[in-house]
Length: 98
Image (cartoon, rainbow, N blue to C red):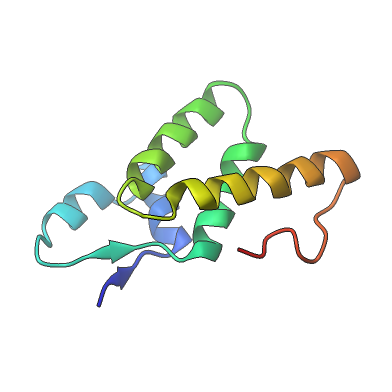
């Protein structure tokens, strides 16, 4: 069994309003996971960011998701969906199906 990290916890960690790294470190006997839809939402935020904020956000999310076996799959799916958003102006109903 694992503790599922929701997007708000990861985002608060990125913004510095919650010390996610220390909290996870303080629970050495627990396993943490991120749901596929949460990873997609977070990658969507990376793809929509610009400039140095995009690079910073991408590095942070890479670090958070590093232990996830499906990390590269989530990112690839989100990049595909976000490219559709840029091309057609909106997501299609199946763009975030993982």
